[in-house]
Every structure is written in structure tokens, then in C-alpha cells.
Image (tube, rainbow, N blue to C red):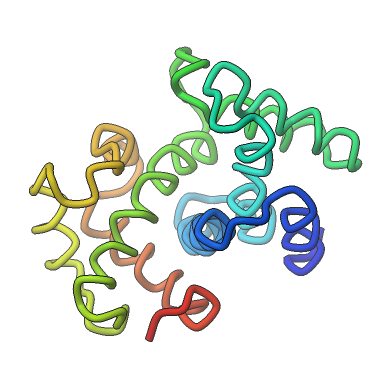
Amino acid sequence: MQRSAAIALLRQHVHGDALVKHCLATGAIMKAVAGPLGGDPARWEEIGILHDIDFEQVNGDMEQHGVAGARLLTDAGIPDDTCRIIAGHNHFLHTAPYETPVEIALQAVDSASGLITACALVKGGRLSDVTVKTITKKAKEKSFAAGCDRSRVALIAPLMEIPVFYSHALAGLMEIRRELGLE
């Protein structure tokens, strides 16, 4: 699926600007880390863009989130393996260990996208002023971007050092910074 088609599908089900931006950010970071982790950047970006497609539909109900999204995506003709990854990304519902690089990356990226965006916002919306050092420092402040689950970000460590992950994540977000309303 082309990026534009994934975004169009997302926008059929997600209307809140903040959630759309979160999904776009997650997609951009997934694309950025795919290559270094041996994945297909286009496919990983699609997974990132579509991972929260059901969040508004289920009203944030974590007993349904992911599973409902997989059903929506199956109905839209998305391949089963992509639907399975999206169904399993809700760590409140699926407690089995994440084993594949794409599953692990989605866990880390889903949380890190908000952390890095928050870093940009405290820099006046200038993502270009955010550095790996900034992200690392702010990640240590538990009250900063409190919704960022640092333990989910840490899952990437066996595959990629955290500062390297932040570097790729930042580069991915820079690619779409204007879509995110950041400089």
C-alpha cells in the first residue's frame, strides 16, 4: 500500500488531528528504523500509520483496541500479517513477548513518537532544535511526556542502542515535520 493510500484509509476512521499526527509520526519513525533492523521501510511505515486506526471507534477501550483495528484492516484488504501485528500492538491486551523486529519496533516507536514530539513542543515547535541529547535527557524526567511508556521504548535496546534509535527516530520525524506542524 502506498503511503497516501494508508493515510486516506486512516482518515476514514480517525478524525482527531492529534491522533492523525501521532499515527503519521509513528509511521515516519517505523520507516526510519526499518532499514537498520532489516525490515521493509514502506511496509513498516504502513504499519505505523495504521496502528491506531480503531482508537476513536473504540473510544480508547484497551480491551478492544488493536483487535477492532485488525478487523477494519482485514475488511479493507490489508494483508493478514500486517493485521496481526496491529492487533498485537496493544500491550495492555496482548501480554505475550514481542519477538520480531517489527513488533518490537512498533512498541518502542509508539511511545517514542510522543516523547520526541513533546521535546519539539518545548523547543517552540522546532523539531530541528531537538537533539538525541535532548531526547535522552527528557526521557529521564518521568513527569515529562508522562504518556510515554519508557519501558516500551527500552524494548528496542537488544536490537539497537537507544541513542541510535533516537537518532533514527528524529531523522524520520524531520522528513515529515511540516505535516506534523513542526519546524
